[in-house]
Image 1 (cartoon, protein in one colour):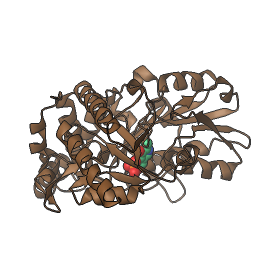
Image 2: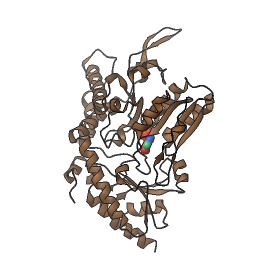
Image 3: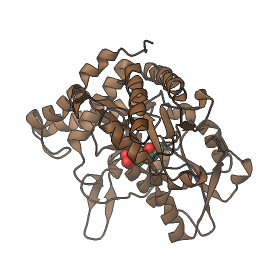
Length: 405
Ligand SMILES: Cc1ncc(COP(=O)(O)O)c(C=O)c1O
């Protein structure tokens, strides 16, 4: 089978020249973190070799070039999700973006207010809200998950007391694509602010914040070909203008006296101190790389591969696949178990064949409990994966079976 994105794309990713235990690398863990094309790696070294200086400070060539490049990266990200420049805040990662929101929106919460999450959240979109709720006496409620790992969106959970709805777009465990447009609509109907954890969706599909009417969206560069240590918080301009900053000092300041301070314009109001300049610039290059291929094409490629992977894995005796059966409701992630072999054992034997998958609880312990699982294997696909990668996995699973016979 030929996929939409040609397999030659692997040539852009230097890591695929590496051998692991003498075998070609088969990387099936992009939901955890993606690999990087040479364009992104070069953008990082080019910045340090030719452009490095602090931004927004020096009135000299290097600082001006670095400032322009860093600001331009914000513009590229804004275009990717149809946002305004002022609405794109660079953070460390999705986790920091959500912590920023929990802190800042948490200041407006009162005792008895409700925060509505789902049972399938990554810990990054659960723990910060739990902590804020404890501090202010708010109540955390959950949209339930059914046996197939789909949300049961019960209208009654949305009440006048609901102040924040925070929901993952795509489950990092099961790949379930959640009905976020419906959830945003229901949240707004009761006057709540809606936060979307898009860590697993923006890397894989077109995403339009205006069309969705999302209030806040969080995602990470490292899951979409960019460097680690850089993430995004999108927020509607009018909401960000009203919000209290999370971190103080450096670039987020306009004027300071010994008694008081005023804060900078957006987005810098939320970017305190010297940011990850190199990471931000190289993230811009990653976004350019993705947009040159086209987010629709990436989505289509992932869908074709997901279907192929499902078909091939289903033929392997002893495989149990979790999550939605209807592949239209599923992104490029497959959680599975193999016989009764522990996922850590499956992963480490696959590693001897050069194959990288994830085994464990995937930072979503409550969901695992609901699914009655201690842990699972998880493969996740991206634009550089091929049908040959899936074939290699299926073949290596037979080796796993033999080892445990
Ligand atoms: C759905 C989801 N949310 C949040 C995160 C946290 O992302 P980061 O570690 O980049 O902060 C992840 C990472 O796997 C994720 O899959």
